[in-house]
Image 1 (cartoon, rainbow, N blue to C red):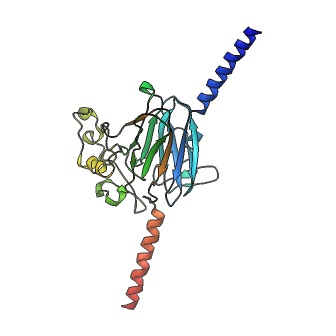
Image 2: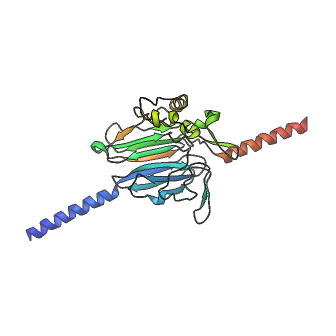
Image 3: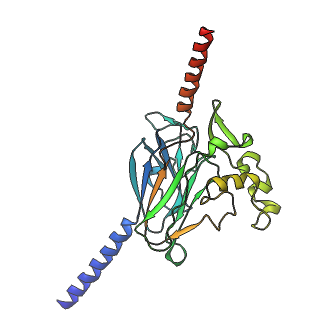
Length: 272
């Protein structure tokens, strides 16, 4: 009888471990933008795909996704998307192959990224907000319930407002994103490749410094580690689009303003 009870206890402990591992880490996605955002999800190589790689998140809504405690990958918001009933279509920014469910594919730049590796060195989660692939939406990432420094990186500024002409990304003539210099020029000095493939040979540029000035806690280029990588243990994470309730890249709002201005101009022309 004692042996049977011991065996039962061991089994129950194993079940408890499995259940705890299955619970993993919860990512809560919050959309404070004034328009729908289509979330993109891409796992690191060899890791499980979550929620098929993407889902729709209406303005003012939130949704939660659970990952195993050893998961890692990236999240981003897609804007200006149109999908049919089969989930096929396209997005103006962050598109991942013309489908709602990205299926493991990454998003086309420019796209603001939230990146994380769970349970890394010393059991720490390593996470960041990255503009290395450019910018399309204000984005923040905040841990809860964890231990350690557990900072909350973000890029809450609307970089599209001051995006240099050479980096502007347009959809039907409307500014919807701001490319990184690497995406825009594709040269070694901006992409930190070839002879520039190291932290000592690839310093910040005027473009990355402008990104850094606007968003001090976000990655502005490939070797911007010191002020851009954050760690925490045992936390869940909130990923918020448009944390301040404003948005960038909403071409529909831009068209409304444009039409309004045309109407005002036409009105005064008639008066003249």
